[in-house]
Length: 399
Image 1: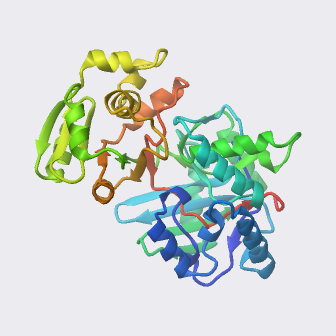
Image 2: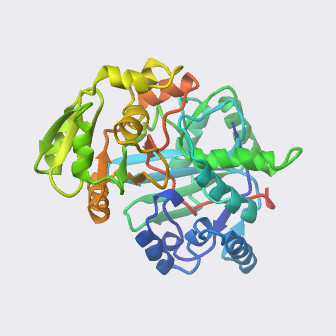
Image 3: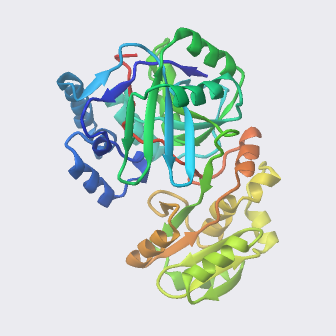
């Protein structure tokens, strides 16, 4: 499932200053702050802006020539550890086969982000940040990960300003690499994060005839039986829909409960069974519960499993947005805010719109849907902790 590669790594004194969160978690304010930290921060590569992909390619070439980035001489897999207050996660970074039946997507993608990542990948001829995969392991690969972390000196050891400790080791012994390959050969892995990047890997592969470095994509593989993931919600902000209008229109299909404080509505959301959402923005918050089952049933697309039909994000995307509010789910009409419900509410207030706050899906539901060959609506899940961008990269020319 994982292939060794020649890692491309920073050779600067302050490693914390050149790394970043994944590209789709960086707000405009965070982008400016990251750019100010260091002239070679990785965001100059992963977020060059529309029509500036050539600048990212030029920067990558320049940094490789100037020694800002170096290429490891031996191909290897990389053991990666993240730790912080109350959490520890370890896994392997390597090249995953593109188009393999071993990789299970579980979430739909939109064409615009794929086109953006594809233009960047074509320009740079590189995988600049890994996708995040989960698998049920407990075998040789898992034991190797923990043995390496416990017994060997890391290539890098850095603590970011967010308080997270990151360590990286290279595994270059051919016997160890082969043992990992044997253990992973018949296993499947769920894409926890990076659906748009994996779709980009597939699109890039179609650009070429014959085998090559595009047949693999950078991936971070974690054994979920040893390091269970943290699954969190992704909230929505609808800038063109005033809160009071959203609540009023919902009353024809939902039980709507008003709360003066959004915190109280969120407490109610956390204890509700069945489909439920909080609508918030300027004014009182509203908890939606107990949707009309006939209206929901009529909105659901045919051919989807009962498990898929009961997911909150399925009901949001196929019923609440289009049928109740007349809104098509797109990047333009529906913004997303990862994890932070109050940040979503604040954005809705600034825009005069409505924040739709969700409970996280369960890992069991996501795995079941993926195993059935189905995909949940876009931005349904946010697994964590996500890998830090810039610790190790992969270029096609060196692999």
